[in-house]
Image (cartoon, rainbow, N blue to C red; front, side, top):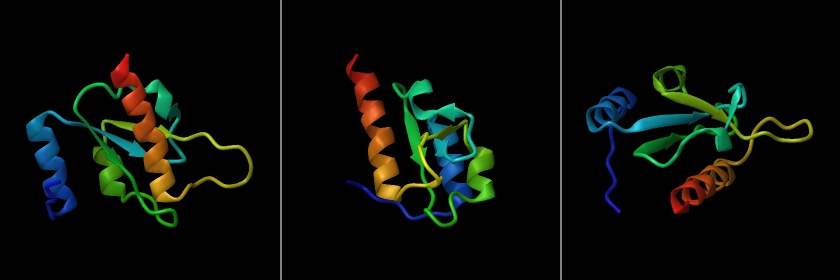
Length: 95
């Protein structure tokens, strides 16, 4: 799997140039992850459990999505959040 190292601004510019829609995870988002069309070219933006995504990345995202949770916690481990949203993307693409 190719890996690139770049600044956030360079990553956003690259996604825009390639027509890739960005989906930013945030507990403050009003749209849930299953309400977003994940079938086209898209990038999943995830932040750390403690700090979340930067304001720059949240502001540049095409859509902000949440993973609803019961209880008092408002965040998940980043690998768990990625797995949940990626599973939904795979489910949608299999239809």
